[in-house]
Length: 388
Image (cartoon, rainbow, N blue to C red; front, side, top):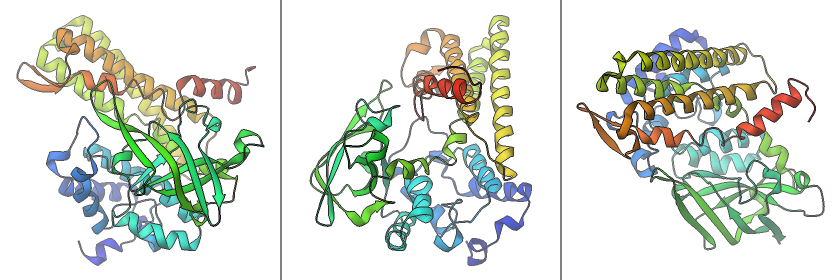
């Protein structure tokens, strides 16, 4: 790809023109064998794809150009992500790209930006998120991992859990307790930790589908320089909230429901269920549910595209999208009959497909990013003004 291409002003194009270019780029470059995977790949599998994106200047659409990004507007970031997902591209190690990188650009020191950002782009540093702990999931402010200052370093002890792909991460950004004498949100700091040191133990957690994506991480007298703290001491709660950004709307994206609906349609055609009037009625209902979810998402996406903002009502989007996906996969298992109880690829009239994994995977969707119960409380108190 030429320097002219990588330095192009993408924002000078209208969204339709950029969508066409993005779709063509991903069609050309996404490795065929990695498209539409039913699992999250390991870093070794996607490293070359990551470096392809980086080499062409397409790795970080949301970073400013001066730090190696595409400098896209909100509108074009959404187009980029939509076309990336449409292509079936595999998920890469993205915590550095989507979370800690933008946070350092916005709130880090010049030294932190110079030290960490280039190594994210080169793939030398891969990141995981150290937030959740045992008994501190949805109530994250109850975290107990402690950090004390010794000289110019933090000494950290504690445990993190549900840490995605920690086994492939060189670094972790984490919330740690640095003051136990104040209210729980006020005594937390945000630090960056090199995981390539003694005292860091990573143990994969095998999920019900037999995959190992999540991990627990034990920190035993682990050290990190005070210079690796983002923001001020004990202000980590506010720093962490700055990471939300697109996460609020992307947890409500209909992409998973749409993918599940395509799999359900493929199953119905292969098994002959498509001719069953009872199934057809249920299929029509979940199809309308997915389209309703997509329409709601587009409403919020349009607000972002036009520079607007939204508040607590975005929680409804997350509930809607994740519970819709669960209903689609429930129908898929039901329609598969006995095959729906088998793990791995099964043969459906000559078509190989994994029926059970999508069902199991989306059980977690209503928990991560704030459980549906928490989101409903947010909506009832802050949108509907109901008594708590």
